[in-house]
Length: 95
Length: 485
Image (cartoon, rainbow over all chains, first blue to last red; front, top):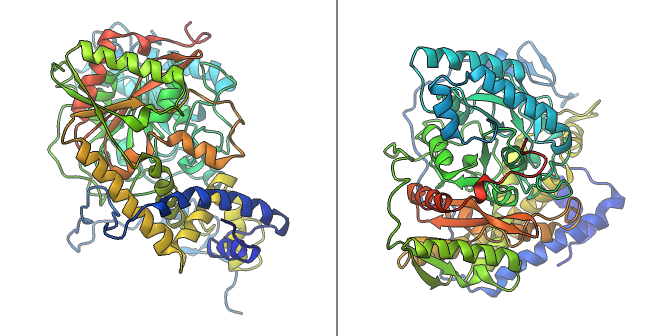
């Protein structure tokens, strides 16, 4: 299975990864190889089978809608790359 | 002293033959002496360890200790440790000092164990060789030209070389059992939901499970007593009765039905590995077990299903690394998109990017049904195969890996061949079952692992069988040349 250049570029953009134009053939080969391996599943008739998302088929537990956490902003922001007045700083979005 | 099991160290510590500070100093010295060649550790924390050891000695003096109090160990660098760098083997988290402890970290600290460092691992646990770590590959102490397996390769290598008596690991597709097998130690992957995932950096959330990596099954049982248990902070944690995993170690195994899947003994498996696994199974037969041939017909499809499900979940989990709140941020981003793209591209290694791209593709519009939904259906078939088998047998046995340790750099450029190293381990994660790998001998001078797979919540039974095997054999006591003194 081969992915064309445009598909590789689209996947990279969706994944928020930048790839160099000269590396696209390598990605095509690697991803293509993995998808070929994955294609083995096609031989199996799975129409009557229900998908299994969680091995034990349990539902996520609900908890009481109550505040259980304290404010850890200062502690958490210690490891942020850039903050100001308790906010995370990113490049300007709107001029 | 350094080659003692946890059970033996526990006795020595608590009868006063050695102090925790002395023991911690001894293991720290071994780690410092051998880490250069093995590269088992990303971070060693001698000051913190000695502080914890003093605390443990106080607990022992005041008779407030438990069985594990004072014993040094290491955490895989995937478990968040407050104030101690938790890198997950990635440049992305090279500067990350978590603001909180993982539940497993809290629990083991509560047991009085002394953490002496953070073990090397494949980046974000994505790999079967510990070669994808940003901090360089870990080596296998049995042969420094071979990989230790992965992703918990630092933990496995360190326990095998007796640099530490035990370590934590995590297992998403075999990451505890495969390195345990390749390094000749014992590794248990519990039933999904038994060990809390809170503070364990997520790779594929429906598959990830933490567990112990030790010399013996008895030690794994002791660790499980401290690690397992319900946690409100993990939405998939199971609220079950607390059990003593050491209680059934010496149960009789007479009449136990052992299933041997035809698919696990094919011609593709290394003959030396098959021979050792068959020898091990004979031991169980002599101890009264019944051997039954079974089928797990969809075994071969577990790799394709896994390499859709795991990357899909990973691509979603790893979207949090955006260079904004924590972790690596690129220099001089020109706009927000550039900040995201370059931080991720520069912060992640090749294997992680490969899996994020695969995951993104299989979840994208137009391909979801063909890949992701299909894989989830195959996942059910694989789980049903196991459930069918467990109607006739109590446990399933086979090799943990199709071959002993492969060479460093041998498979790095061939992801698909690397993925096939997980053929006997990934199906267990897809089904959420427990399984243990125990040392069963050597093939071409390298350790071979016997895998014992059980039905849900059968950890005590697996530990019982593994313990029985270790009473009858001494493979688990072998120490690699160069690390025996």
